[in-house]
Image (cartoon, rainbow, N blue to C red):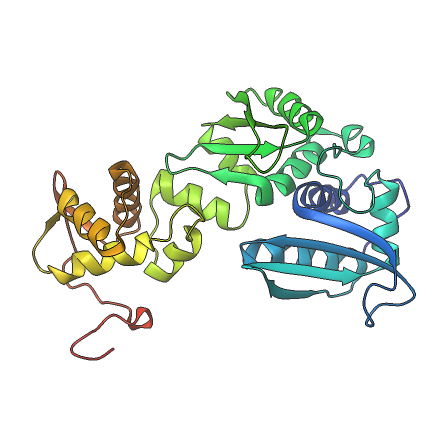
Length: 312
């Protein structure tokens, strides 16, 4: 348990942990102070809530908060993601004292003045907390961040520029359902972000840049389905390549097979990116240019429901 005093972040490793939690709160977290929320809460409820598609990322925040207040919250599935919630007047009041508002704060959120007054380690810890949830690692290894708070983006860019890394800022229009702009930055300073990131996004960056032996299940969890694509690329590619084993299949034939099966068209570069991931994780191998096959003596994991020696 960490001794916390309203409005103050300790000048030690505990303070760095708190700065990281502040980053998580600035991205996908919310603090509430409301009356009669649910029966499980008292008359006036103070609680911290955070949701993300990766349970592993949400679990990191659960661990941080347990270290700070010595109390466990609950992680439960919620609308296709995982939600963490904990009731604590002490924690919520403390975070509010650092400058975080109650309820929705996406457009106005910024780095707390207390974090900005600290040394670079505290500021970078805050950015780590933000990137764990609102950061993106693209297929080419680029790390990207996007927010609707221009002030938060600009503050983060100012801090990162002091680290002598190359980055590009951008703004994009919101979707047709929302008005306004999103502000972001991207960078290909791979080594720097390998030190900054934690959780699934660090695993993605290591895989893309260096390669790492992973199972199909692990790959699918790192690269899940998106709203724009209902194709389970990782699993489907593996099944298609296994179906011709021990022979190879050309990526164009693979593309045609998947398009025909799912009755959709997609960019073949997307398929090549996924094939590259499967090669780097040693699930498949490139037999020659454009041709792919299973590695020799491969053992197929039966948790996928793929038939192995006549058994599912």
